[in-house]
Image (cartoon, rainbow, N blue to C red; front, side, top):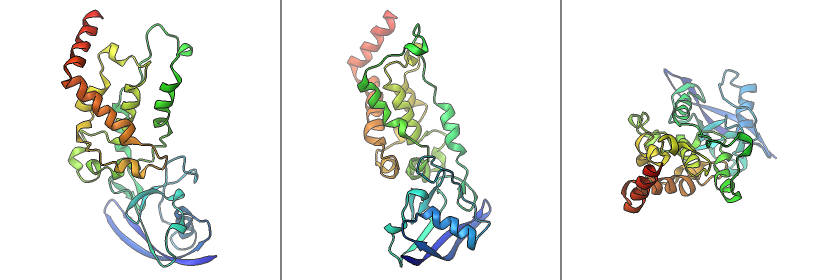
Length: 255
């Protein structure tokens, strides 16, 4: 079955822009990205859009569809009524380059600020061993495709430009949480306490666990429940729990 859909697509650049109206053909089984490609082919050859795999694994085609951060390649047209207007706009949290393409370099800057995995001393790279339960615990976070939808929907980033310098955002706080729970990470031996660093250097305290990041994740990662809340608990325990504080002092003295 084929029907004609009414699309509103944001067109513009760094100097501004507005929504343009398009009537476009929609076929069974198509996704929003198919329609954007049809618009490029038939009505708007200069429409800028970022995409790559069209399979929900590269994270390139992030946009806001009817106000919700989504991957265009994973948003089926069947979820909209035939007479419903579909509005496609660029990610609101990041500066527009042109049309649906935004400058997400903020995220790469934050990625560089997270200290990498620190190998354990005296253990060759091919000899790392860890329990299967520890592998499974962090495997969920490794499913991230860096679409940055969680970064876009996080109101700390989205609605408060002044927070960006101090706040890494859910994607990179999740990365810190993954490293913090890694049994072979030896960052603490070099004086880096990842939970404390998340609080002091990466703005963990700004997160008020609304779970909006988890709700838009196309990989269904439970970012808030499995990464951010446990990371907050470890940061607080280290700072305020007297037994944890005493244990850290004893271990440091023994070292």
